[in-house]
Image 1 (cartoon, rainbow, N blue to C red):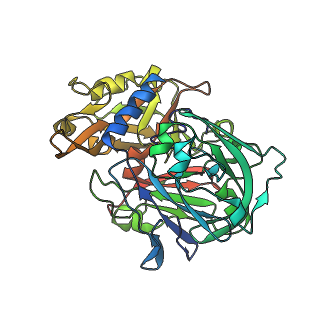
Image 2 (cartoon, rainbow, N blue to C red):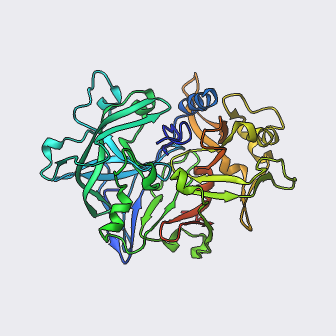
Image 3 (cartoon, rainbow, N blue to C red):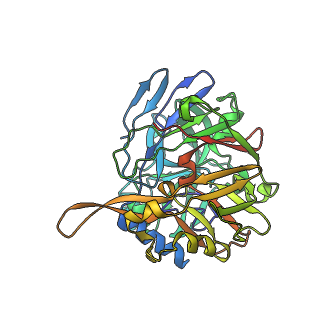
Length: 418
């Protein structure tokens, strides 16, 4: 599902690097971490409530792309399409399943988002092929900001030096909404399951990687750095084909694995089952009377819960009454906020306020830079699909996460500080 600006799951749940080379059986794709400005984050908060890339650099034996990070909010990295390669930045999103970028036919005059971003030009690629997908060749992805639409095309896709042949992806020609205009990324690369790829029959890139034997293990993992308004150190990474101990606290990877919820087959997301969400030191608040269905989503910058359940949690966090309607709060309040606990199977994961309070820089009327804090927890109306909770980036920054397709499970371990 994409993003904070989440034009995906967090908002609608319908649709949510150049390269590292292979090192053993594991390939590392460093991600740039690009949060929103404070002003943009406020706007997105209210919206939810109401409804080229640098060349690869080596780090030891593992190739790494050093990317810039601006404050807090989105993790993105490069993908190359066509021959010769046309490079784009995309959100690597475990909450959606399509790969799409703007196409050359997208009008700059009508859609400013296309004017501001790189566009795929099929005429310049010797490996381009027209779509012959039996399930259809039209791209139609509904987002909170409007419908992104265009055509499905076929070409070579290269991720971290791994070349996927015959990859179907979206060439967007209609891209409405300010969200896309302001985004630092060109498109989205979905890492969820084929069941939610549109139209039917379009195979997600990681599935094709596995089918083409480009990765030994049908597994990938995410390390999401925390910068809290400071410059990005370029350490965020998507690891293709397994995990890397350098991203585990003290180099010790003690992953706790949780099986996918049986209803995952209906949703197509990385869905696991929790038993409760509480405040540390307190009892159950009744947030999950039948258990919590948790979507593990790298494309959502906050924690999200159904409006009809999340109220007691928000009230406990805002006991002081100092958190504004748009989510902003005095940064001095952070240290007095409670620790949140998420119980999954027999493991309780803690999330202190330093993880769920987002920090960004703003400029005062006197042109002085100042830090502004915002609550990274919000409710949304329950979907027809059910009362889903989204474990977004605040959770995934603390816990290095692995997504095991072969074992149909998700694993978490305390992340290193890099």
